[in-house]
Length: 217
Ligand SMILES: [Fe+2]
Ligand SMILES: [Fe+2]
Image (cartoon, rainbow, N blue to C red; front, side, top):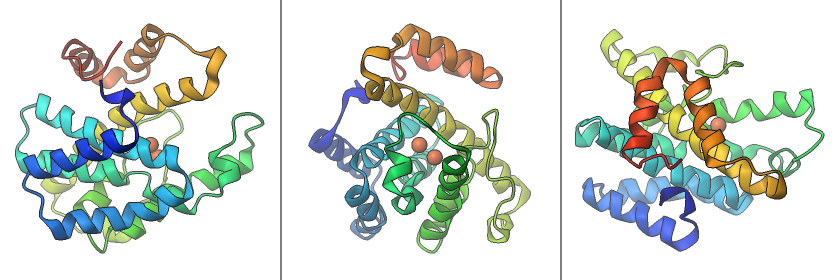
């Protein structure tokens, strides 16, 4: 069960995915380097990134997407919150008293992550830009100019993969919030309900992912 994977088992699952998809040692080392700062800064978000990478790839697999598409989803999922290495711990660890200022600060992680990743893995960087764009308070409002250098067809593909990544992110974040809340846990069924309600544009896919056991509810 993906959402219960933590620590070494999680890292091993990522290694296995790299091997299955034929990812070379140089790229693996680049991704590890890009994630090292986040791992040192705040472990829970690092592990969240690994789980979102794995489940984004599983969604692509479920949709019979090519190995190339699966690789892009894996990479962009692994790196989607890399920019949170620059988010102050005070904000990342905040459970109560969330302020408008904190909200302003946390939003920076998308463009920060883009800047870190784009010199190394430009497509993954372009995909991760989308991961908060399908929610009620979408951000960032504007993408960096360099993100628009793709053909219309490729841009549509980037956006589609960003949509799939956002589903994986929503799912894992909902379960992680639950773990942090301890006694105030909501049930898996309630999370499923929220997944279906708040991702209305992707309702059939969300339902299919639960049916396939990629999402557990
Ligand atoms: Fe994020
Ligand atoms: Fe995330």
